[in-house]
Image (cartoon, rainbow, N blue to C red; front, side, top):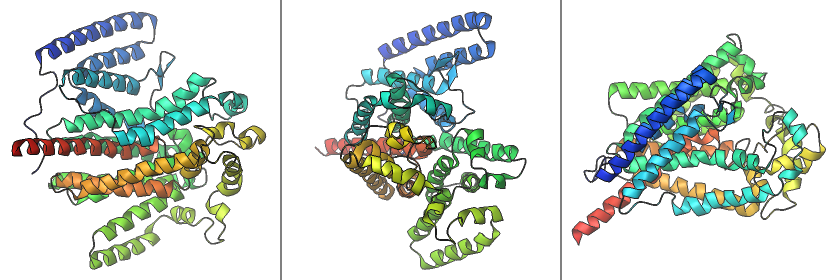
Length: 496
């Protein structure tokens, strides 16, 4: 039985009372937008005022169908952490297009839940107890140490942008968890959509936007010589607002999802679009000159070849990979081999071993069970005593989690991702799901492995911008699992 469509689903706002409430909210939103536009053009920046008014008018429309908000959020979310995205308007921190879209979409979804007789749980129990609760408790633990942060030194290094507990919670808890909220809203949209695969369209467009922006920016920033990024590691960070390692992980997770679903795509134009997207993602990954990203790309490619389970395919793939290495630009080959010839672990790790990992490990072992609280690097002993220690996190997902949440938190968060990997694999084998989505979930399982691999040198196990593609597929998996559960319940009732 295929569940690409479901005649039992009703359009949002089908109930008369619900339409009345929604229409009233739209009228209020439009009136508020018009009033703000009139007053703001006179008193404030006209361009920003018109943008805000347009967003408010759009948000009022989202009240009719929260899925519109999900689609729009899917388009802009990869740009959220870049320097090109407005992070505040009118000098108000947090007043930006992304947050307004999320709030409007959430409000629309909650209004819709109020009209449903048996609404699904917004947050799955596994996510609640194995992910959100541990992170929330770690943030409360960390809030008790905010006064220990050397604010003056860190502000001078542009490592943090808060000075109090509310700011700490905003930047280290609320802002990262907006990504989880997006995934949950996407799950609800997938569950109630007749053609859930259509949500892959804004996902593909968003990947193109970030990859294209990075490639163009890198070319312009380096005067047409992207190889300069290999020697000046700050070029991308200064231009994009995201580190090369962060961009590399984002693209590799996207690469896994796209590559494993390529064989399931139907139609020449759709397949051509997928192939072009894969090419763009690989090109963007290479231009990060991130060795961790190179390893991640290799892992995805090797696992893809092994998944074909045909000896001749594996042999041909290995031969093509080997033949392509000499064709790569010399700067990429040199960057990939840094420290390997000398077998110097510290050089391979870009100095992380001596300068970051060992000093932070000593601090982490002072409380190995529960850790020191979320973002504990900011008040760690190396941070307070060593003026040259200028990192905001451990550049190792496992050490970060061990430092912040101890061995208990590390095991719990790893357990969440391992269970999520298992669910991806189960959905990837489920014949009742459309083949294209099966491929997406197969790629998502590999994406978790990529997170584990690249986590050795960067990122976190808590939500980050690098994980946007992964959380997109997590949202899809939650929505599809609930669709399957609903179908089974419906079949059981009919059999009775």
